[in-house]
Length: 183
Image 1 (tube, rainbow, N blue to C red):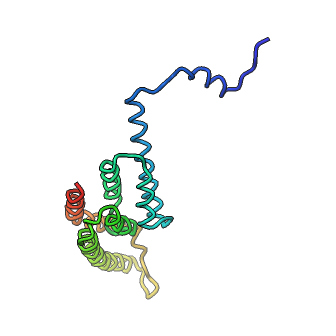
Image 2: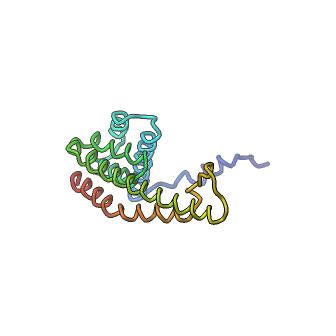
Image 3: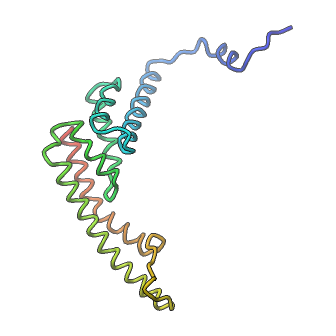
C-alpha cells in the first residue's frame, strides 16, 4: 500500500530541484525593497513612527543607498497631494531623508501651495454653497436650518476638480524641484 502525503509534502517534492536565476532573484529583491519602503511610509503616515524612526527603518533596508533614497523619495512624492494631511506629513519627512531640503524647499514652497489651494477651495465653497441654497430656495426649501451637504452636490465636485487642476502644475513643478535637488 502507498504512503499518504500531505499537500505540502507533495509540493515540496515537486519543487525541490527548482531554483531562481539571477534576474528572478534581482526582481524579487526589488519588489521586496519597494514593499518595505511603502510599509515605512504607511507607518509614518498613520503616526506609528516619527521622522527619525522612519529614517532608521529606511537605513535597515538592504539596498544601495542611492537607489534606496531615490525610490523612497519617488514613492513619497507620489503620495503628496494638496489638501491632504498625509501630504504635509510626508513632505515633512523629506528633510529627514536629505538635509539639503532643510533650506525651505519643502516647508516654504509646499506650505505656500497648500495655503493657496485651501484659500481657493474656500472661495469655491462659498460660491457653490450660495448657488445650492438659492436652488433649494427656488424649490421651496428655505429656513435658518438649511445647511447643504456640499460633498453630494455635483457642483462641489466640479469646483474641487477645477481647483485641483489649477494647482496641478505648481505641485508637479515643486515635486520636480525636489527630485532635482535629490537627483
